[in-house]
Length: 101
Image (cartoon, rainbow, N blue to C red; front, side, top):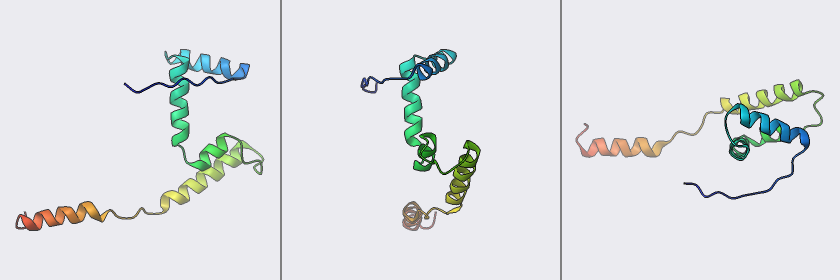
């Protein structure tokens, strides 16, 4: 079982009501729900995190920000990752040792 660490947080009344409603709707405790949301948030790219936190005041609307983030993420996804040659090379070396099988 994962070790649990307790961190008290202060919520606005609106945030507290939203947390209660979302957790209840899914049959989860507020602690588990908040923990999963936070774990999801920290796995997001920095650009998405910044957008969620409202760090892009130069955009006039959420739609403009959403389009910008989608455009940047699409550009990033078009960059092909470097090929992993280690596994392929090891596989080829193994085949060579077995006589090509």
